[in-house]
Image 1: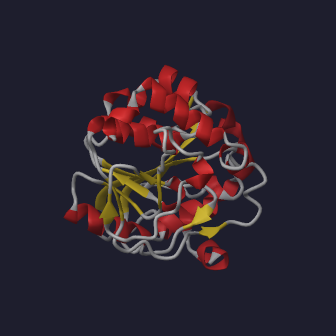
Image 2: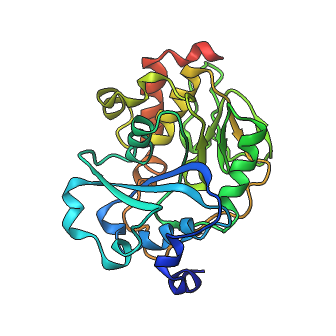
Length: 263
């Protein structure tokens, strides 16, 4: 897949004549992945239905470190925007603030997405226009005493076209957010940096609960996106999942917003 994507003409990718979906794809990246994220962007530009815009949100300190392979992809569709934050929440919050009335789709920076990835998400959006649609989800589970179980005990959802209160979208598969899907606190950086500094998926789940928005696993999740070799040397998975960072951050959220009441 990587070889095929590299062969695609960047100028052609950014000047597609097909009618674009009314969707903004939003993602972020970190210094160690700047060399690889161009492949992710190429896979997004090569979708069989084009997005109206693709935005990569990077920290200000990376302005002078953009590799040629990434810079040459900028054009009518793909742009790089710079902000002061370094947290993973950048993938969504800045697009929410700038485009509050648009459908926004997020994805990860270390994967290559199949050509029909966006079409499958958007097809379900047309069926459930008020729902958050995700290709990959976990189910938040609870101890008998009522406290949330540790994150690593939350099972991956195998169902398709399903929803329930404690279904949580997992960002790597791609997540579609319709306008108004998240509580207004979603942009409160003092809160998300305190409660979930390294766990954007958890923050966005809490914000969907607070807004009364259902999370739904897509009807056609497809195969998992293809990892880009060498991108996992620096990964939140090591601290959030294996190191129980997600468990601690979810429990902080659970207490702060009294999420128990949604049971």
